Amino acid sequence: MNEYHVFVDESYDERFFVLAIVWVKKISEVKRLKLNALNKIGKSRYNFHFKDDPQKIKNVFMEEILDSLINAGVIIFNNQPKSCKEYAEYYVVEVVRVLPISNSIITIYVKGLKNWISKDCDPLAEAVKVGIPNRNAVKLNLRASVREGIEVADYIASSYRKCLYDKEDLCDKLESKLKFIYRR
Image (cartoon, helix red, strand yellow):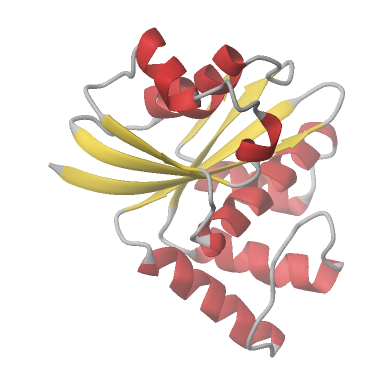
């Protein structure tokens, strides 16, 4: 059985809720991507965050993402999840459904989701009730222990949401990098 690491982050406003999904077989792929970007900006440590980063850093990190071998896709929703069932559907069921992966073990890394759900909500248990697609076994990691993958997903989600409003040079390159773009 294959194993995959799947990083999910969101970007949203009043019109769109965009989930970016990044998947790799080896975590070293996203660690190497970040290390290359750090070398280019001349820093040994830096936490990339699209919303807070200056344009120069955004350009370097995004170019590194677009030139990498990582796999990525986006799902566009018209509204934000509001219930435990919706969080489970968005972050687990829909993510697994759109991934071109079956019969595998998938660990989904999501930063911040633990802050949005109540103590009464177990998104993985809710997802199991709905049904996890493609005969995959899924683990959910809410601690974001692999920050590099979350940072890549953050950049893809934020850049793509920005592209929904304004087509820039980067948008065509980003769209050609994505393995899927689904509207739900």
